[in-house]
Figure (cartoon, rainbow, N blue to C red):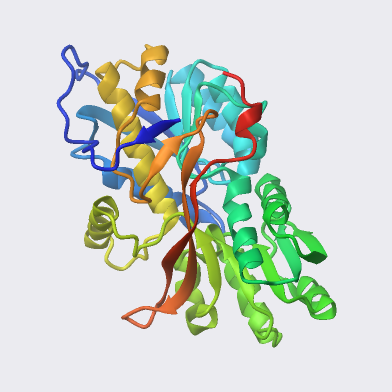
Length: 386
């Protein structure tokens, strides 16, 4: 695996001789900006732009074109088709949801263009469906949920009830949780994307009376789930959550209701490394009223990786082989700490046990504690042939 050197300065290196700067390199960002999950795409976009220095990446002038997929796979494909064929964009990112990624990414990678995911990491694209033109800067879906399963197992729970949105990431999520949690599953429910009334699910949880609940509902759906769960008087049954179900926006909306919740994550604001401290400070300076989420961090990290690819080619995105190799050999400062590419170009990274605590300003934050896994890759990498 290729290790990212966390002490290298990704954006402060000289442009190679012959670098093309007469015209900006165009980068396509297809993301979700509308609806209850719109803030997820906005954070990816703004995190990405935070890493751009005076409109450049790796010293190369870039233009970022951002389009809203509206959480619609068909809309995402239409945008990708225009970017690829009409605008001849060769470097793309931004998709939040795995159902959109599953429809759009193969079209991009099959069109001699490169896609670097800042969020979605579906299993369908990690194993036999992998591509040399596809990279993931965040996590593979299964791993994201295996870690809470491992956390619940380590805490000694014997029974669990599971609930997740009914799309690829939700299915990968519950599969991942069950891979590490060895106790009995008393119930397993998939909820439609966009659903905000969880009374029926909560009634099932009450009837099952598990020792722990695991649920995965990103964005405003996650806020609704926890509020309704607490209003139903189920606070005696603890939750263990994945990183996206406990982001800073969700916690701010929940307030004290979230304090004490256990989380497994790969990034937290309190991680003690120079890159994270710098990124947190830069975000707070630019967006003092907005909480920092892992989506913004992943957008930022994606931009750092792209910067290395552009620097390696002097901004010549027509040489896909050289651009790909520059991305594979990227050396960046990662806010999440140690990071490497696995054989399927998905992350190999550390994971932490964490807990929601009340911050100094009274707003809940997730504080990372001890590592629960080091240099963890994903189970699908062995099936990837490049």
